[in-house]
Length: 173
Image: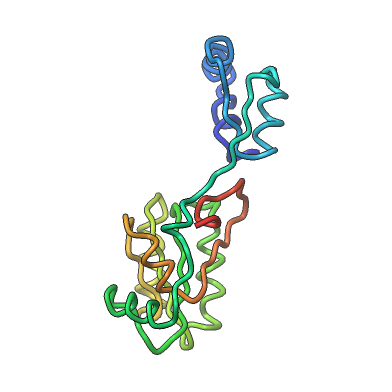
């Protein structure tokens, strides 16, 4: 789609097209993680025998639900409130992820829940300013984290307010 890597590459008609044609000619295989990407590659002339479908996946030995007691222990470890439902967003802080929509909606529940925003991106400053202005105490912007599984297991709700997605890894996690 319009936000995908192939579309971004091909927007620069001269250099992007040359780069893609070089990749297409020199590559033995392309990996498509969704039907949409497969269709885009085919539309750009990649032979179907050169495209291998391999959807995103996660390790379910790591990413799995926990008991209520384990969730509470994880919240204590991470310093997350124990007395309110916890909502977590994990992803890039960019316009297409719809964080402005999430923050607009948060006004309706901010006194009843706690929101954790994990990630980095071009909207980091704007999001932090908005949280400081409107949501101190009910929203935390934590930046990037390596231990996302702990935050997922500590949360009650996972949210992804995206305007567009392929197959997001955070959904699978």
